[in-house]
Image (cartoon, helix red, strand yellow):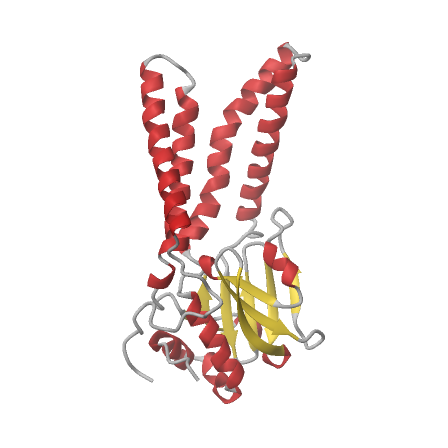
Length: 286
């Protein structure tokens, strides 16, 4: 099955999915980007006038711009994602060894950077509030500021710790001869092919790829980090993958799952390069 990679967006878009390029997303991304630029300009002007509050605007500007870039990568480029990121992953566990469809690098970078930026933003205010509370412990405004900045700094710090401990990781879907392995940000799960009833699609803040699962056939869920209770956990015992997080067109994942569910004789190729080549070519329509 040799050939060039299929053009991005060449596979049929499921009827249950709305268009990824929607006016509300474009408007929101532009608004956040302008807010980031405005914060940057406002911070520079405020500091030039000797107003220390300009520091707050300067610290908030990178977060706004990062949010806009992440929104562009997640929303507006969904159909332009090609299949080059699909590869083969080796693992001692058979359920994790197969054809890998990773989550997007831009989204993962955002989730790595935002807690660091929160610490940079809230940390100095937390230290200042702590110092003020020590000298004036009965000041209500100082105590409120101390509580808010303390919670934000503490949560972001715990998030960074979980990143270093690899409890929060970049997600991926692995299609193997024995089943489907899903590693999300804070949990992972596995679904043997014989437990899959059917492949479905839905809409939940963007395209959703779903597997309907028959319980008691070897499938499992494992929550790795308790800092983030993801919405997909509500689908247990079924599988749900938000298309906005993938590095590929979500249509590729949907049609690949359908193809291997309907063609058990082809699942053996998921143990080697033939499976990767099939997805690269987009040859997953029954």
